[in-house]
Length: 345
Image 1 (tube, rainbow, N blue to C red):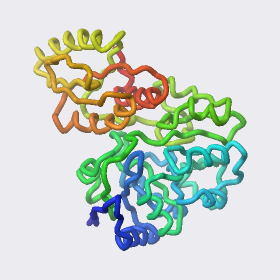
Image 2: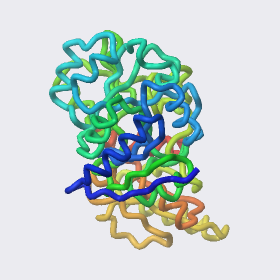
Image 3: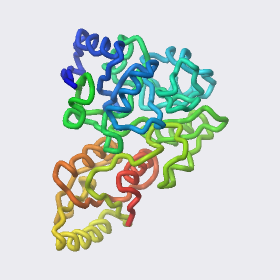
């Protein structure tokens, strides 16, 4: 497949270029485009054949549901059975932005898009290029992250071009993504609001709006959900080729002490070692250091780039601190535990 690759200035987007890629989407083709969270691999959400192309491009299991993007809040009413008061509150507070809501779907959403479920996960991105693209396509766009299934999600142009050139019809290249982790997913299809995937809209933020909001119990387990209601709840995710280990310690000094010993042991075996840590950890490791940033927000933004960089640097084993599971730290640890295959030491 010949992939059309074009770069767009996100500050002064070329409307003709947006129209070109929007027409590709309307014609049932696959297009990768930037959002504020990660790059998405998009196709017409209402076209089963187009949705099938997403699964084929990613090598994605067919029962893993696709997330649907809309350009305007009003678009949701055509796609779902009911928009209740809770949904309206969340849409008013967090849309456009990195929050996905799970609704009971209407029949217009094909089973191929919903992974065979009677629900659909929908969000309205804050990225203006993404919204203009969807609006001009004239259809909702199914768009999971634009990576090979199971690999770290792409947050920079170089991530997608290396892996997806030749697998999709078009790539619209913008800049790096602002948030760096996929959207929070909250399920409103039952009586109690349930977070199925943590993200930048935190549990605390959701509770300020709705009151009771729970974390799906499966987020505490390493086993796949039997029947996942949202992307990221089944199968191996976010994993580099390197073996990642999460190291528990009281602080970064304790982390450094433990990792020093681990690095020494593995260096004797001839392994190439990486350490992913925050930039105020000034310890001199006998390893390649990957800077995650100075705050939890920066860690979230840099996480996937660092995981992808492990393989670019041919790292065999990497160590990363256990981050406190509060606020955005819940999303960070959710991604890290999956990336590390729950190897916590």
